Amino acid sequence: MTTDPNQLLHLALRIVDELVPTLVSARNAGGLAVHTKTSGTDMVTEMDRWCEERIIEMILSDRPTDGFLGEEGGRREGTSPVVWIIDPIDGTTNYLYDVPGYSVSIAAEIHGEVTVGVVADPVRREVHSAIRGRGASRNGMPIRCSNKADPATALVGTGFGYQPERRVEQARVLTGVIGRVRDIRRMGGAALDLCAVAGGRLDAYYESGLNPWDIAAGGLIALEAGARVTDLDGQPSWTDTVVCAAAPLHDSFRQLLVTAHS
Ligand code: IPD
Ligand code: CA
Ligand code: CA
Image (cartoon, rainbow, N blue to C red; front, side):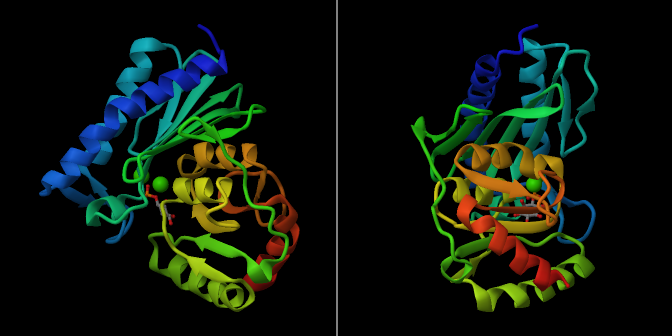
């Protein structure tokens, strides 16, 4: 089975092309069945589950030996070097309320390294994508992050988790940030926030408590657009706390966050 990143990208693009129209029409039809998961605010709709099942079906019909890790429970080790990391709807709250800022996020790891990422935004009709080492694009056009260097003039995105205690802590950290930057946006979902940094629509984004499926595709897209994507210690780890910023801004912004966390 090939591990050519171009072919993996092509498959991911084919999948989002097929799913996005159904996602939008189901939303517009209304009456979606909704359940809660880890807390009363952590929602999952019937479309999150449908979308993940369909993504996995389409992957397996082309590539039956690949592994996958999906937010809604699709897990399999596989026997090929490729593992797909799937957030079928990132930004479910936005999706449910018809607020822009939800996406389908699909990444492919090869031998444990995220190598391909696709994030499709049905509302703006934009598909962000990247292959490691080959740059990032939006609707086929190359994108670059901003060249901002000063946190005081940085537009910063963040997000909040679903556990009340975590949110209170995130609000505390935010009070240490908001007076030191241009302004804050809470747009969501995480995948599109990372793509916003990639395309210069935000100068930086940070959030704690994220999962691999929130970060994998958008993180690669931001990285390939020239951003730095690290944890709070500046290590290139893509779980839990993510600090993503234009390269000249990253160090000073991360320091600001470290202080806000203390
Ligand atoms: C959430 C979104 C949101 C972020 C949360 C995530 P979900 O993912 O990305 O913007 O702030 O931390 O859990 O639940 O909508 O897939
Ligand atoms: Ca998510
Ligand atoms: Ca999700």
